[in-house]
Image (spheres, one colour):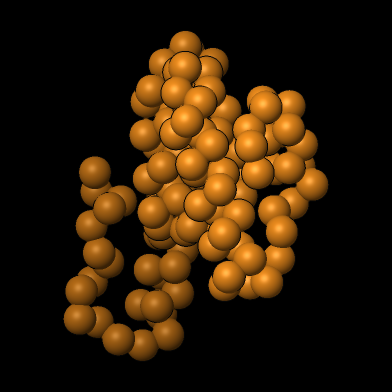
Length: 115
């Protein structure tokens, strides 16, 4: 995937940094769109892979966590969904001193995931 390649490796400066950040954001938004599409099309496994790819790029992105949880549960892999949820809860608490958003907590409760 072209978007996964680094932008002008070795180039420095504000423009290069801004462009790298923008390209990374575009990649993440594209993966989120793909994950949602895969869920709608019935391929929860691919949706989960895309959502997990986002979490590797941005582990604090709760929208990707919610997609990963939903995709794993839909794919019938509730233990992996619970692990992703616990892992993110711990990361948010340790690194930022916060709890997941109410929206994330509601999805976890609705899907019956243990805290």
